[in-house]
Image (cartoon, rainbow, N blue to C red; front, side, top):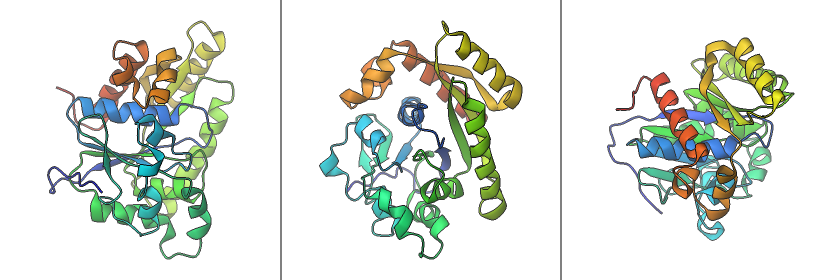
Length: 268
């Protein structure tokens, strides 16, 4: 049990990181964006809301240390503070995930305010952070809906592949429904193109197509395919700690700068 607040008067900005398609770099983006934001002095809470628990593994938290975690928070069995752990990154804390989250979709069906469970928990217990980042599961179910209802803005990692825009359309339709029914102020923070291979003509075409379609919503930073990014989670470290000089680490630092500028908080 680890208490994390620094200034209890602060109200965090909440960013959901979501894409219903798996394997697009969503969790990698969540881990490394959170790390990069903490590295420039922001106090950050990363909530692992994916039953696979990959963000928890990628930040080096042992499986036997993950209870209470985000499942208990969503189910009302623990507070955010109860479920929060420090990480090896100064200023970055983690609310971990366990496989129990897989059952939450069913368990919440008959619960009052089922779409607001995470929001209610954050209102009660997340003061003191500058940012809360939520790593959503690769699905558009009730857990992702909870994240979108709780969020001020959505960040979408989009793999440079042929069906990228098709998947994005489905996600944006869900966002529109969430705005209409639960969270009218939910904004699109931005779209980050991931797994870019400059040697691949398809990657270049996808970048051009997404920028043509989505315009300024797409970050200028593109996350490349990089072996150091792929290796880092197996060591329980963000790539910024595993290999700060790698092109992947530098890309995530640039992304954090763009995100913070869009948030109106410029990096000094």
